Image (tube, rainbow, N blue to C red; front, side, top):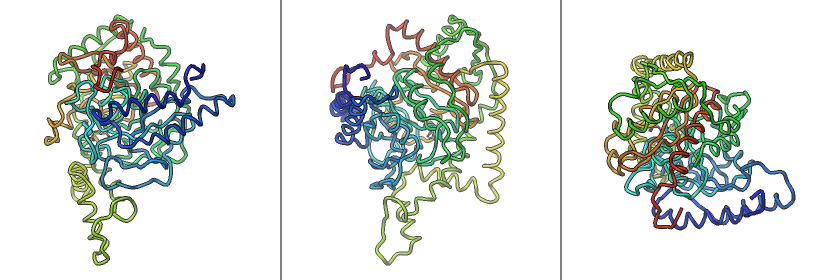
Length: 486
Ligand code: GLN
């Protein structure tokens, strides 16, 4: 676009055509309005024609997770309780996408209030994995991962509270990054668990992810937990792409039994690859990581039970049974009973219980102590190593429906990703090959808080070496969708 080869309007139209051709099968989007998309693109073309200096992503289309508020599009967080709601303001991430000149193609499907690992908890539609339409695209940001993997958008936003960017990226063969907590603003992000929620990028390669992260990161006075420091030089790090001299720690607790053989095999090969690229690889024990999942499933539901109290039938979206005769409490109860899905109700009940008087110390308090121990495990590990690695997920994409009635099996998808959320550090998932079932496997690379650049540097090195081996990006091996060639 910068060289005049194509206009932003042409690029936008090509992506709208692709969405029209394949999204019936994939189901990535909840909302696309072609007129709004083309108007954004034309505005960029006019600014470029007027000689304005535009940023590197100006005119690039992006799919936006439906958890960020947008004044010109509905925002549902995948929940029926927000059906029909129009936010009065843009999230900071949304505003920064617009300021960078990105063209927002639409809002993507997600697990209701970002609770889930398969996008099956959406109140609206099923999203399918472009590698195999009978399988899940991961979650909770499954609409975003599917959109990027299906070539409906080159970039997408997500949020990662326990793995919701890295896990969907891993199972769809793309790159997904959870920045340092506080590195990207939560203002206008519909809250699930405020001490964990982190906006981040999805892209088809590491450099694109870095460009997007840079575009929406940085201090925001509207978010009290926003980090007031310069954004790490992630783009420069992604271009540097080298691990020579780095010490890489393999997390012992995440490299034993219980992993799908194809996942374990690709991980082991990637460890060998890192050595061949000049990294020193050592095994590191983080004993408290074993307790991350149970601690998360007390902390996240506790915060959710508080955050979701605002959906009281008075302020947003759905209102059920307001016939003039019922009390406000009755209308609230009816609305919440109908507006929330089963997983959201389960979390609200779990969290309310964990926070209740007499149980608080035994559950929520204990989980917070475990959280501190996990952070200390990271601190000790990062005294010995520059980055830690593990498989992103224990298995590849599972069939739609397989874990829908088994919450424990669903929760296990985030076994390896949750520690970084509890500690607030930076972590990425980058494709590292296909399992025996022909489905993508992700490598997770973790670094200390504020060392996002280190994650990108290592991820870009792995990506470069693997693409040399494969003769191109992993996504080039994805099957064609009925809607046409990639
Ligand atoms: N799958 C995890 C959960 O259900 C993580 C979700 C997320 O990161 N938003 O809570």
